[in-house]
Image (cartoon, rainbow, N blue to C red):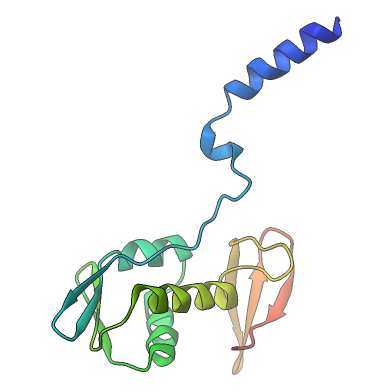
Length: 137
């Protein structure tokens, strides 16, 4: 086989790979889409965020509302917050949750699950096999 033919075949095969597979990162921390009504904030894409993070809605709400320091509830597809919040603050809270409860600290992949042993929580990674105790920051 000629080296030129090999390069040509390689380029041809690479062109057939879908764009989403070519990305180095297959997981991106979701960004909140907000709507404001008087002194209240609505996270419009709340269900999409939960589905992307692949976590229990109640677990996320407990941690998120505690860190935000406000009352909130799910109303349909959105999360209602009883205070006005800047988009930057909401996104930082989502990122903190993701880094603590979703992403593996060893391989940085989102293929994890939360395991409970007594009062302690562990993050078990399905990708690399790591298991680490979750320590809130």
